Structures are given as C-alpha cells and as structure tokens.
Image (cartoon, rainbow, N blue to C red; front, side, top):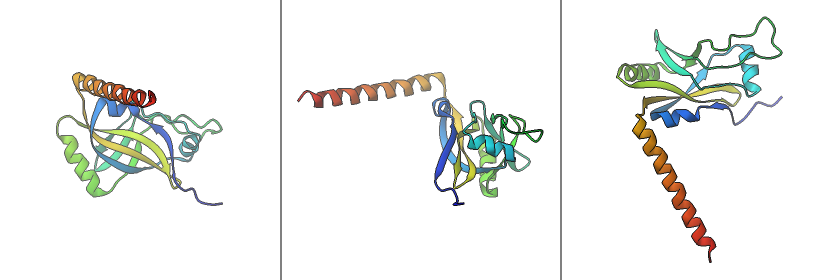
Length: 157
C-alpha cells in the first residue's frame, strides 16, 4: 500500500483569526489513540473551544472535540480529553516565556494530516479588542467594494 502524500485538512478554526492577533505559528505533532485517528480520517473534529497550554514542560491541546468513532467498542476515547503536543524543547521554552506575558495565549488554527501523520497548527496569539474586530471587518468590506468596482468598470467596455 503506498504511503500518503500531501496535506488533508480535517478541521480549521476560522474564527481564531477574527478574534486574535496572530504573532507566531507553529506546527506540532499530536499524540492520539487509535479510535481518534480513525475518527479524524473520517473528517470529524471541532477546534471551536480549543486551546493549548504548557504544563510541566510539556505542551497540551485541550478542549478540542474529536467525536467517538462510530464503529469503536469499549476501546473508544473520551471526546474532549487532553492531548499531548509534540514540539521541540526550544519551542516549548519560547512559548512558555511568551505565555507568561500578559494577554498571550495558544490557539489551534487547523488540524490536518501531513504525509499520514496528524498535525495541529497552533498560534501564539493576543486577543483583539472589539473595535479592532470592527476595523478589520470594515477594511475587508472596503477592499471587497473596491475590487467589485474595478471588475465592473472593466466589463463596461
């Protein structure tokens, strides 16, 4: 059987880019049980309330919902358990120092398979204020209107 190639996105957290200023992005491996992998391969997961933390010199992914595998038996996993993240010691130390600063948090952006291995993209982020969110929406809307005006002007000829 040939090995998997490429990247298959299972879940993404689109709201994270709206709610946070993204400082740095890291790719981390994920320690999973067998039924979790099967459930992810079926394309089922939710990163909505998820976050990452550093506890005892290890990185953990918490509150990420991976539903139970439907064909699983008594060996099924719990849906919102803590999952260990696989990062280098240097990365963990850097993230730990940044998290101690006020306002920083670790947010999962996407969960995917890369060459057959489960990976999660986590971001070092700082929460946005309400006016920042409104400003970002206004800029996006203005850009969309400008692009629309340019495209209609080209169609008049």
